[in-house]
Image 1 (spheres, one colour):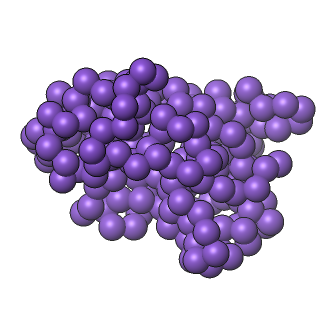
Image 2 (tube, rainbow, N blue to C red):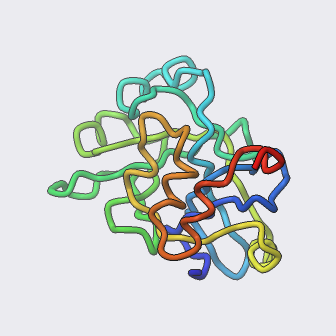
Length: 188
């Protein structure tokens, strides 16, 4: 299993019972000695982006809804984007350290016209997941999270329903077996 660092995925293990994170996949955006910050990739809301951030409604990837990024600062928003391979870095874009260079954050105060056309994908998250210093490391050690490499398509799936299983399924060895666990283990 890999070390938790920006650009990696946290995949909730069956041992993680917190309803905020059960069966989630979290993209880590920042990890340092002070803690970690990420967004939950597989919790779309029913709220269209255009209703909350009208200018960004036509730029976001399908489905064009806000995603529940996590339980912290749910009144705020983070935008994760994927740059087109041949484009220069637009104003307002900051690459996520450790991720492939094209994946990063977009400042939502940036005028849309400065980034529109330079992105292969954009997703907006209401809130985020956060951990204090050494908290995430403790949760990983206790078996609450698998830490695995991220792929850009994980962030921008049209239907994230099976993301948890698909991410586990592509992992090597015994970790892939976890993708077949039933939702209710008592039915096994």
